[in-house]
Image (cartoon, rainbow, N blue to C red; front, side, top):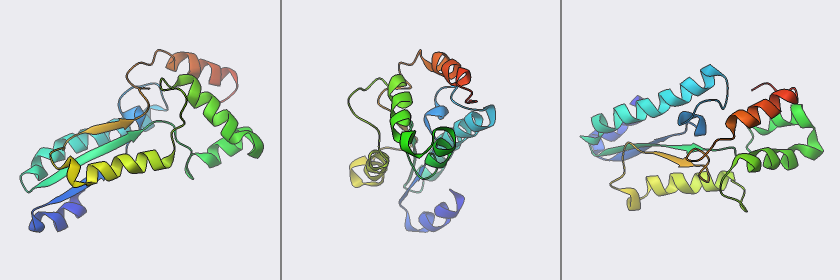
Length: 156
């Protein structure tokens, strides 16, 4: 953020978007270090937004739920093997999500970021936009799923 701000402050405008995850709004989705680091990104965003807002710079973050990417798929390949990766990924993610009938894709996260970077969001700053199909709003299944994954031998 500080490096982007150095360029944006003299211009009097700009937009900074960071990417924590759904773990930034609820606990129990991963190891303590992972979860606390995601909370820290949101805290930094909320702290920096008013400071940079004085210079016309908006600061937001987008917190996606489980989305298959080049970062997540290698872990899944190690757990499930090539043929089953996407099937199991969407089965586990789909089991916990609230918005049924659609799978989160990287393009959905990109579209949310494009919105925040656009003029349509010119008055939005300090926001943590969750792109999670309602997962973090209504989720009583985290403990159930972590228990199932633990039973399967997959540490969470």
